[in-house]
Image 1 (cartoon, rainbow, N blue to C red):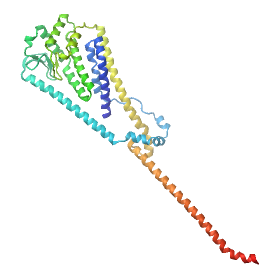
Image 2 (cartoon, helix red, strand yellow; image 1 turned 45 degrees about the horizontal axis):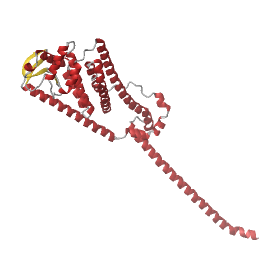
Image 3 (cartoon, rainbow, N blue to C red; image 1 turned 30 degrees about the horizontal axis):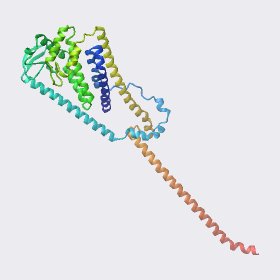
Image 4 (spheres, rainbow, N blue to C red; image 1 turned 120 degrees about the horizontal axis):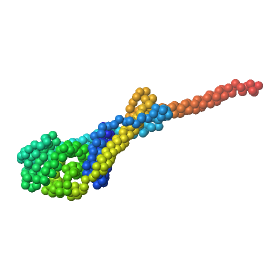
Length: 388
């Protein structure tokens, strides 16, 4: 689980970087809708479950090419390093605990902010009507039109909405907020917040989240302005300027955040792309998303495959040495004990050999002493015979 999580987080970070690099050229070439679609790439990769290792394991022929005992004897220290430390496992567990606590705490904080701001806006709100299962309310605590509500869909309007906006501006503003609900973008923002919570430690993810929200607004603008004339585009731009706001809640979709005003006005004044270019852009975005998910999933599956193959390669050696199937840690410890016992046996045999040498030397000295004593005793007997 921890290996999969680390792989997913690093793969998602790589894909976030890729989307940040591609979004500008794709926007200019194929339009804001295609650029917004690219953000599906890191989101899909993060929720991708662990894939089965479809690569073939180490063939049995290769496993039998070298005797298992020789493999194990040559690699006992490598096995010990691979299987070693409870300390490494404890470190991964501590790292996972810190990550999970940060992710849950950060998401809870952001979601609580959204609920508190929504509750304040709804306390003084007045219901104007209900259109297409969306409640339209007027609230004194909002400065511009805003789409909100994950389960109960709402559009919040400022109290001076009727006075500040012309009839055409009001229509386009309501179309914009309604498009957010039609495109299920409040739910998309909630899921993006989950992705950001998983990367709460990563500054790149926070930058990517702001860019995602900006591309979302551009795509919604393109939906509203599809097929309209230049006058409506100018009217829509006027509504954006009147709705400029410095702050917006985390999940809600406001009509205009002032930091993105210039970019949105420039983009909406461009003519619509033709059908052929839109189809080409959509196809290209789909290919990029699928290829990115498949490539990063393949890399992770390959890493898991290598770990599985390493265990499969050394399993027969550990079995032959221990007489039963053991894991890598037990096999490495058994090999170390076997080596230590062999050293002790060799030392004991060397000591016994030295004792044998000393006994042989002592026996040699004893035999020489006996020979001299026999010679001394036999001299009186041989002397008289020689005299006669």
